[in-house]
Image (cartoon, rainbow, N blue to C red; front, top):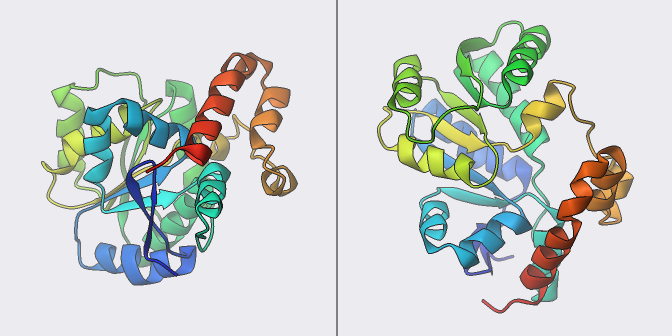
Length: 241
C-alpha cells in the first residue's frame, strides 16, 4: 500500500491507527518532538481547494489523516485504499490513555465554556492520574496573544484543540512554532462527544455512509447544511487532483 494518497491536491497519510500510534505519535511524544496532526474530512479538503492560504496551513502538518468516510470513498474512486478511517474521538482517547500511563501533560482548548468545563470533569473522572495543565473554551479571537501565552506557559506534551471551521488548524499553525514542545491535534467535535453534549454516531450508520443523515435526525437544525455536505462529497469524489 502507498504511504500517502493524494486527495484534492493534499497528501493524506495512509497508516493504520496502530502503526500511527506505536511507530509515530508515541515515539514523538517520548522524544518530546513537536508535531502537528490534522484529522481531515471532506469539508476540510474542499476548503483547501477554495482557499490557498488554508491549503498552506494544512500542508504544514506532520500528519494529515483520513477521518471521514468521504475520504475513504474518494480513495476507492481513485482505485486506491486507506488502511482505515481514523476516528478523532477514539484517537483522542488512545492519546489520553498513553499520557496518563506515561505521566504526560495535556491542555484542552475549545468548545463552549460549559462544554469545556464538562469535558474536564469527565476526563478527570475517566483518567484520574492524568496531568491536566490547562484548559480554555473556544470563544476568543484567533490572534489573541494571551491564549498563545497561556499554552506556551503550560508547556503541555499534548494540546487538544476543538474549534469550529478552519479556525482549528489555523490556530494550531499560528501557535505551533512558538512552543518548545507538544503534539498539537485538532479533534473537531470530540470535546462535545466526550462531554456528553453530542451523541456518537452509531457504527452501523457509519458503515452505511449515512452519518450526515444521522446528524440531521438528532439535530434537525443541521439540515440547512445538508446540500453543502452533498456538494462537498461530490466534488471530493469526482474532483481531479
